[in-house]
Image 1 (cartoon, rainbow, N blue to C red):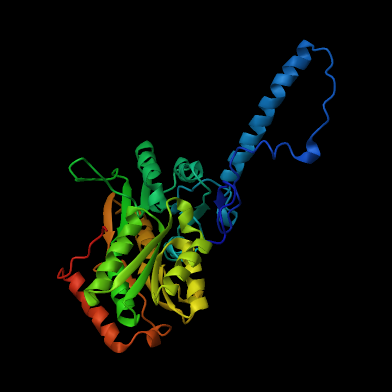
Image 2 (cartoon, helix red, strand yellow):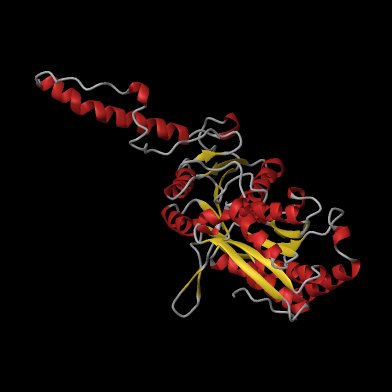
Length: 400
């Protein structure tokens, strides 16, 4: 998703960290050529064969120079590494989701997993932050063409590109965080290509627990939910959250709203604040967001009104200390590290990998920062629900 400085700008493909920015080909006609290089039109001299050939060749030469410059920029490696992937060691490429590095959430979790692999496994990890549209596929293709040992796409939006590239590059390992598994006409799950690992989370289970928590401490019969993009993946958060609320408060109402229907809905803090303020003003005291950096606006609304919010994907307490009740965390870092470690150990296999409460792939934060906001009796009740879910006594819905 899963707020997001630094932002990808104007369709650029940006290598993150020590990587050098790689700019996508294609400059708007209003921007090229630069004003300083434009010349006033003059009458043309009579054409000669040499001049005609020159007129034809110049645009071709210019296009070739631009293409070579583009490819050279894309080939730059982080941390001063100027060579292609080595035959020794472990080379990993990670392409971030919409919003990129710095979202204090989903992408940062993937970054931490890659960073840990560098330290613990000696991996060389290259991070790429895409812009829009074809830039995402271009980032993945760049890494695959360089024959990285593992290429990871962070976010459901990479599903189709990962599937296609895994078939095109059968000797490269791929992994997709929140990969959207396809089904046939009968509803049977279609497995991904054998060299592609689908890393999926049971977000509904973690959302169930924070839903129960919101209802138990909210002191209101209304609780709120702000989603990013209105898609099935985020519906899992909403469905689990509602089920958790109703498990402990059957007559409570959940006010659920979404920021939009495009990927931009995951990086619109202004819209998040607008939705949250309307919910708080309607009597909601606690809002759970599953909206990327849009959630930063939810936190701002919580500060402004003196009410509570629930973070997502990673511990977001520091975004609004004292106003974050908890965060529903996903082990994106652990899933990314696990995939890299499997490649290093030679045990990597394609397939579907599920991370839920039982696998400690999801959960909620309870520590010294928010302990004062959660009474011991509420903590005990939520832990009881956790155990019931793990034991299969409570089936958490994943659809609305």
